[in-house]
Image (cartoon, rainbow, N blue to C red; front, side, top):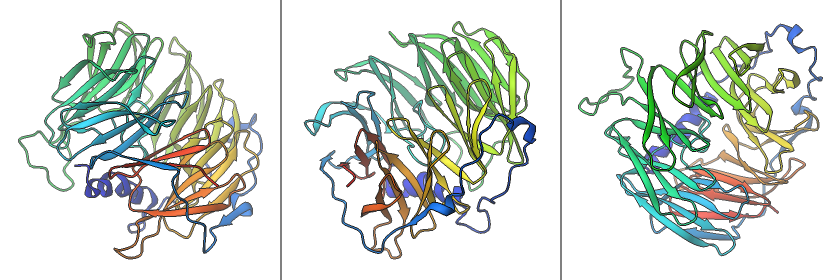
Length: 461
């Protein structure tokens, strides 16, 4: 489904789970229990965000789009931008399919090409998916290709990975499996995809709170980028994450991490317990392990040697250039050599770096109802705290932040208020909308996909 009902299940449902709007499950703010010997090289934590908190004015100017583009009744679910910002790639779909990838030219405010695929657009299937509520749908961009996944995943039947020519949209090849396919990454002619076993099987009616008796299997496929042929495949159980680097793929499972070479052979394995997140920066592998009570971040050399480890109360990673940011019950910046550049022991998640790379934004405060800005050196931050129990950074432009907040009190009200927040943390404009499925900032422009049929372009005041 790509209806509002599905959004509430996959999008806002995840938001509410993350923020604890139901019952007493809200994230508890707690100070870190880390051995402080690990932090001797860290800079002091920034000043408390509450010292610089800003509030939303009662009345703000209406924020109107510079332009909009309709997709003829199809739901626009995902947005991805080329590195040069000259092309947007929109993921659009209808209930039960078909779905399409549309290349949009912001300069002419029109479509360059549109390629249709059987089945619905599949959530969580692009390499930049961060396992958070923001950005559930999208495509994976390579230098000359666009990779998209569509199929009947909701019906637990099949999905297909499609390779499209980036300039023309022409279909190059597709690979179909009776699994939920997702692109893990692309490296030097190799496309690595993960195929998760469907649960329950298609012939079994799903029930509430249904869980598998055994961990589900995931097949890791290495596909030739030229023709989609399978170079090799490996099956694992209880896979949490797959990352791709120049040397091959890294598979995180409930037992640790397995490093696979480009030929599919095992390079090394780490028996470090449940691995939840892996990131690759050049020759360096970052591995996050543990559970809610104790998390460990490790830096691993190309030969599998663990060169450093940090006990940190975090559950989310974001790699930007060679700097790793981690979020959870603290926000931490870590260099590839393990040095903690700075750390703030306030809660922060849904990490976001602005287009020019000089500001880190988080969804913040104990109720996850605000947005906090950090300079990348950890200094000069502010917190934007709108009148809502649920708010989050949606996307960022060079000098502004776009924040969504759940504000609808009645069925006739827009479900969300979207704010433009300037570099001082002050709201400058706002508008109401029922849904925002995805957003991306390019230069000074923010592009929003509303989940209905419209792409909107906004310039913050």
